Length: 241
Image (cartoon, rainbow, N blue to C red; front, side, top):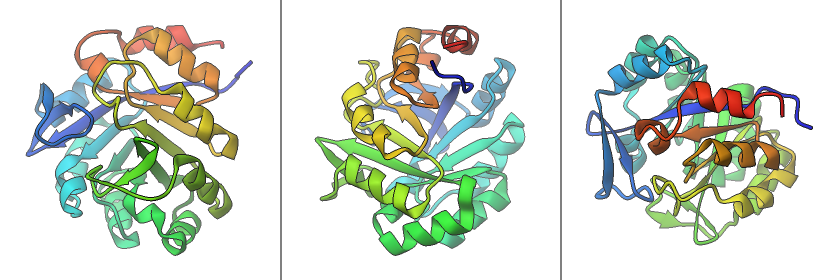
């Protein structure tokens, strides 16, 4: 039986200044318009969120993070904030932390063993490595390019480097409400690093399955925006497992 508190983290994905959901991370495939990201942060905070998950899609595609977005969402939500999207250097991670984030997610840069070791040592709990997987390979550069490394291999590298936490996303299921990729999670969890799951979560039953698999939390986007469940229902369903 798992005893830790399972955390359901609402996602705020921002493209050109507005909150959106994309199908499979494709820039041209906006499936939900979520309005002003600051307003959405306040909404999730009022509904009982314990943390927010902010993805700067413009930063992910360009490689240059939007730091004022981090500051505005951090201030509006008043909650711990994990951010991602174009963070490919130690300096950019530091800048996001200075802007109000408490965790920064890196994806593309984590494929560099030297960067991975340096960042894990320097940032500790503030570093989250995002393992974004499409067709069996880790996707990089805003999910626009496939690398030659598998999720399991990158997870092993992260464990060896001392990374504190992984965010594992099924890119093909992201925004789809098709259910989590439990097979992908099963490949990564044996590395022993705490895992947050993302991609495809549509119901509290999906959250229960992800928790039972051994994840410490999950990121939910489309399901919350479409009213598939509330944060209160998510907490109730996953408590005491």
